[in-house]
Length: 436
Image: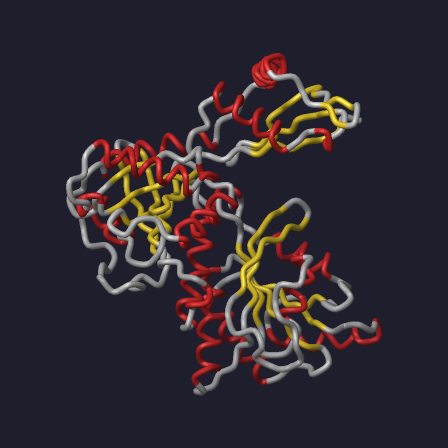
């Protein structure tokens, strides 16, 4: 299920990035006194009172015809369009400016819920000055100091009140999946071939797709939302701002997906960037399927060719040993009919729950077959295990001392769990915790 999105907007130099960093709990955005330092939207995850959300920092909005300022305004407006809740940041020290009123007009048109944060209220004596900001017509102004962290709790309480209900974020009966990969591996062609129509532009020119395009369809009585994302390039090759936006939207598409399909180009083989891109999905804890496209272009292909390519993938993507591999052709539609059932299978595995009693039987049998290691005369003791989350399946193992569980033994237990329960297509997380 997709996390709510909060966009932080405002005119330049009101402290948006400082507020962003304070909420995120780390220094992500560049903070300087120079207006316009933040030019691209920056995404991060945040949490307040158990509510997780995605947060976007934006460049300052200015209504000007200068090319750079126009681009900053455009990407800020894109962030507003993506957001569920908007935090408008203003500066108590400078009071209401024409630019503040212009930004407020943009927010009126968005019809999104807006929380008004009056920043730089470092001195309690300035709290009386916040009432002037009622004239913006955006409701109650919340005094905050992003530098000192003052007032953020009340502001964030107001933010999460506007979050959509869990049932509104996404239809529970719909499986959401996305295609990711390098430019020109055939992601858009796969979308069109699955739908049987020209839904997205297909071109031999790499980088044609610059947005994350959602398409809804049904297959064998099941609902799907399919997302075609822009090709992900090396960061050093992100010459254009539009390509930076494309990367950000691709990352958001991964975060919002239940299953991620990593697309490789059979004709070009595996590149370093392929491994880097697949790591995004793995680290996000999503179900993963490796899709080898353009299989029709390989001359003399046969079962041995497929076996050799499979072995190569397993060697190059060792961290994705759980991911199924399928060889397809968007041009000939070879094996495309197998994709929806495979996506459903991976989705069901990511949502699978295991009874604690059955899980502990598997753990104890694994320990009997391969006793726990000892370090400096102290032996690891495993008391109990239980599943605490799904998507990805997450298990807590209670032990006498987490430091005694070596990485290799944790991997052994993970493999035993995988052998006992079918978790193909999804990562699983093991959390070591000391029993009190």
